[in-house]
Image (tube, rainbow, N blue to C red):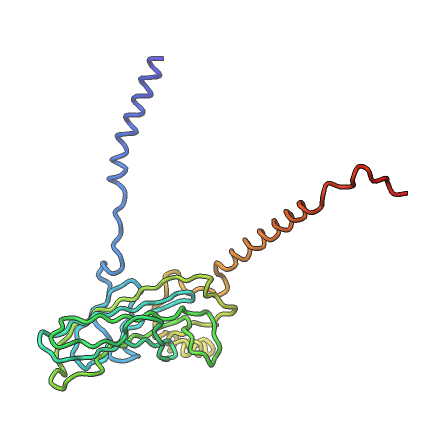
Length: 270
């Protein structure tokens, strides 16, 4: 018994000693995408030259008052993107009005569900914050509708009203895109054949012609894990759970209403 107890104590002490070593050898938390230095530090000046930005990154850019600054990001079905921009203004300036516009892959301007996409900075204001939360991206829509669809989205930031004396003054901007996953609550029946990203038409034509000269797409950004197939959503899970509950309710109702069988005093049928 003494030997067994001694061995147990030794094993316990060995296990306690190995815990700090295991904790020290565990890998540290990896830096986020906005802290790893891969975030862009400039913005494009047109739709074709828009700077690609991943969701969760904070892109920065310097420019002059009056410039058009463009970024692009990818949004998939079931996501509700929120675009936030911060404009750092010069020390001395008059009243200025800045505007944040978001366009889809067909370059249709998307309305903001909520958020201040247009704001005016009073004289001497150091910075200005803009925000635009889009509607939930749908997997499929009618051709006449203006619903957000999966693909590339463009962000344009510019000043729309200022004094001529402030034109050309240096400004610095920050832009960040985040999304909330809505899930099956926004699911629809149907999906696009291809997401609305630049270069798909050229890429499809090159596939048919088997030519490698135009096989490269103009945009390489896509959501983490790739584009969704469009048919799966958590609505399937709730449908299955509802079917099981309905079956159990039917069985329970039958068990409560069928009774205990033939009464005792009723003579048998002849």
